[in-house]
Length: 302
Ligand code: HMG
Ligand code: MG
Image (cartoon, rainbow, N blue to C red; front, side):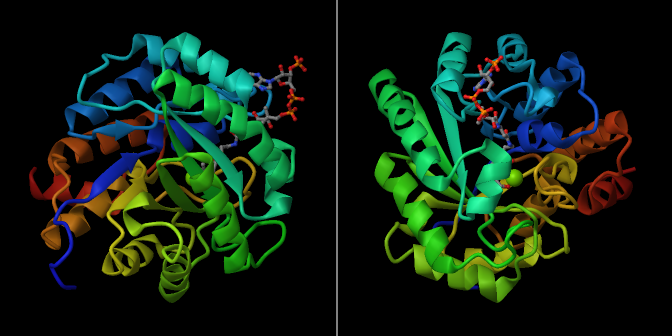
């Protein structure tokens, strides 16, 4: 890979939200808070903290207000949260949130299961949210889900992903995160997607958010880095999944991504050893295995 592009990569840590929303039981608030604080100690600068969604939909995150209130908030760290509608926005603002993310899928079927509305209806819900956010100085990130496949409809045409990504970008999202929600994509597919979207949205406004169901996430990220992508969503210890995508495993592990980037000479500002320790700790708390790279790093330093 050539070294002409920027030499830094922005990591958006999504474990506390995307990871913990999928656990079969609700993690105590104190563990969530400790996880986020430890991630900040390890050098993560953007940590997606929770979701202000319906607690009937995602009971695992029903303590959103308490989590945010109890964090050791640092000036140099952003703590964004997911917001699905105006009610969620009002809750998030009441809690003191300054960075939000809105989300819709590129597949109609997934949207119906996930947020109980069509893509068009989702966008209509988001316009007033983005307008309020802009008036309040709150930043808005946009997620497109099911960009490389949908658990209900199967294939998702690239043109559908492009259309939804453009809608979110034109609505005012500063960055569009492309979610392979069920982790089915492969490297050339990922590149075709990025090339198509980059025709209308600058590549530095795009992020990749790959789940690792088939073990393809690192390869897909590498393929996207090659095209100039420099923002990567990942999850400590590879936590995660999606409650509306049965069988989908966690996001790519942050430890694995940082190990790869370090080897490529791309800086993240993250202390990999501290991150690996955090990964091992949260994995043990949840009764899960730690990430591959995280375990290997800690073994080497024993
Ligand atoms: P709905 O049932 O159609 O909404 O749900 P509604 O407006 O009819 O409201 C129903 C009830 O929910 C009402 O309560 C509302 O007050 C309440 P009731 O009057 O019946 O007692 N309600 C809320 N409560 C708290 N906070 C709110 C809120 N909104 C309504 N914000 C809704 C629609 C969108 C709310 C629901 O389906 C929902 O919350 N879904 C969330 C789904 C979710 O969080 N999915 C996971 C995140 S997406 C993801 O993981 C993918 C991603 O990682 C990228 C990738 O991997 O691709 C981002
Ligand atoms: Mg996700």
